[in-house]
Image 1 (cartoon, helix red, strand yellow):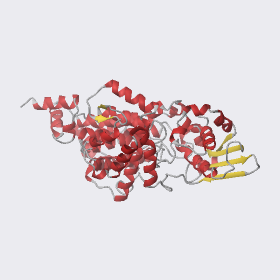
Image 2: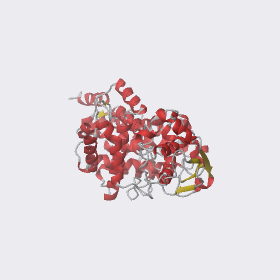
Image 3: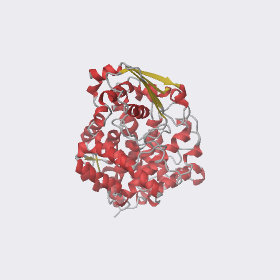
Image 4: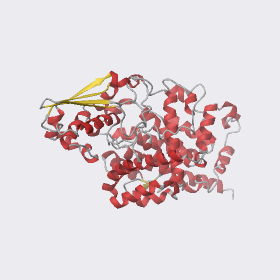
Amino acid sequence: MSDAPDHTRRWLINASGAAILSNAVPVTATYAQTAAAAPPNARPESHGDPSTISPVTTALADYVAKTLDRELPAAALARTKLHVLDTIAAMVSGSRLKPGDFAARYVDGLGGKPQAMVIGTGIVTSAVNAALANAMAAHADETDDTNPVGPFHAGCGAVSAALASAELAGRTGSDVLRAVALGYDIGARLIVSLGVGAGAGASATRRHSPSCLTTTFVATAAAAAMLRLDPRQVRHALSYAAQQASGIGFWERDREHIEKAFDFGGMGARNGVMAATMVASGFTAVEDPFSGDQNVFTALADNPAPDKLVAELGTRFDVFSTTIKKWCVGSPLQSVMDSVAVLLEDPAVRAGNIKRIAVDIPTESLRIVDNSTIPDLCLQHIVALMIVDGGATFASVHDVPRMSDPKVLAIRKLVEVVPSRELQMAVPARQAIVRIETADGRSLSHRTYVVRGTARNPMDAKEVEAKALDLAAPVLGTARANELIAAVNNLDRFGPVSGLRRLLQA
């Protein structure tokens, strides 16, 4: 009998740990052993004196720990389903793109206990590895959602971490939705509390890229909730998250979107699930990573505002402020494509009848989309492609050989990009103006003020479902893709998430 704790601990660390992590065996047993093994001269405060924990950290940890017991308001629940569907569809389509394919083959080579699926493949691997691969697939291109705060990509981290840890711990679809909504809320508040995305021109001075930095905390919160960590364990998991958090803006120089998929998605999802499962298996950590002489804010913040980390938790849900993209391209190109789509309604806007194209965009967007080597990030290419094809599809904007298409190149030479300070300061953000002069002497112009899919102009459920079908059907087949859409629409009534494997593996 005395051997039971030792066997339990070794099994949890070396095997899947699903039973313990789903509370079949209380986690406190593991902690009893940890405490017993502590050195006799350990300081009392090493076990966590509540008076030394900041009110912000206390509120945050309590909120995360109680996530699965807290119902989402009906509107937030419905909106979260759409973001889960959009992100899963991005994972399915991204599994066939280079970053997703590389990630799947990489984790397959690592092996690992069969805990969670790699979407779009037949691979079942460790929860940490699955989170890494699925998040890279989600951001394999520019299909996944994005929150303009920062900005940061919420879904690739939150959904991949929630799904992987749900399979590990035997959680339900309802649990996934609550954990995903939590991840969006924590990510948006972290960015604001750090001040790393604040102000025009911030990208030139900030030390950390918010799109890279945030995902670790998003995924940690989602996984910690899914594993039902208690408030102290949540603080410890967030401490490991803080130590792993990173992100430098040179991702803009990635020429194939592979590192970017890791930086924005895979790295943070892996970090978060690893942090939560480590703590669930008995790891201890610093009691409060958000206060003290050295803390998250002293290390990572450009303009710290700690109270904003917990502001309006439970009343403001950041799924509503997160954009579901109409177009499967980079966020700065959404307004450009909206404008071109409107102009294409005029029969004069056709290849062979174009004299000049001028595109005004915010100055900060120029560094991302000006003559990018990645087709779905290249403004000149996308504008030319839309005019040649009379529109754009997921397949066309990801077709690298089309960047050498003579017809596209002929139009691309006519495209002039105009950085605009006025658009940089405009509200709402990321507006664009497209002006076209035709060979027959006409001058056409359209300004997109509010991008389709943003909080002020959201896509409805039918649009999101149509996008998901377009992304998933080529991989899963139309029948299974429609079944997947129906399953996510009813995810709050879905049983164990492992039941989704038959719909998502290919």
